[in-house]
Image (cartoon, rainbow, N blue to C red; front, side, top):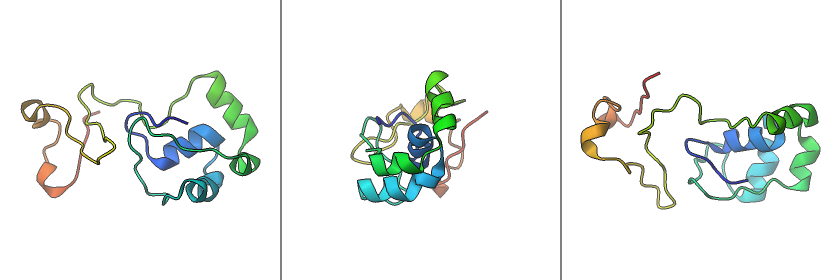
Length: 111
């Protein structure tokens, strides 16, 4: 599966398996921790072993309805996390009102 903006590994697992119960299998298959924030555009392998743990009913619903987890209600200027780990791909002028706690390492998105 290709990682979309603002998706964590758990978002990808939920989207690809219909359940986070397959999380440990997907993480192990990809050599990642469950808390890993993959880069946009990177590929996460959903193995046959992970799909045996999946929830077929939920997965079918997700696929039929085009559900993408982790991307709802993001501001148009949300930062992107790239392969090298850099986040701020927008100008500093436009980010000041989106990230009032930027210095503390806490990122808050307006709803």
